[in-house]
Image (cartoon, rainbow, N blue to C red; front, side):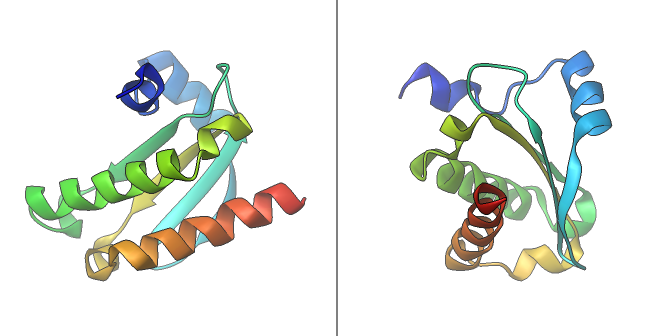
Length: 113
């Protein structure tokens, strides 16, 4: 596993505050909110927030793993954009395919602008 794969989700507290200050919402629904900001590093990072309302720890962790996998496999970290993904309770019904399609739509839309 490359160092990028391990580091795409690592943030300092200062970086998280900066990310929330600069990130602009690109998708907001009852299940998920996605915000995008220019990256503070040489490659994009992803911050995933899932409260207990989403489900048990295994459910939350699986959703996070799926999101990280799609972000890495599609090489969106190369776009030098940091993303905040906030999961809400209805997100527990997402499948891996749902996440792939949702993120593909968001990042394709962001690149078109």
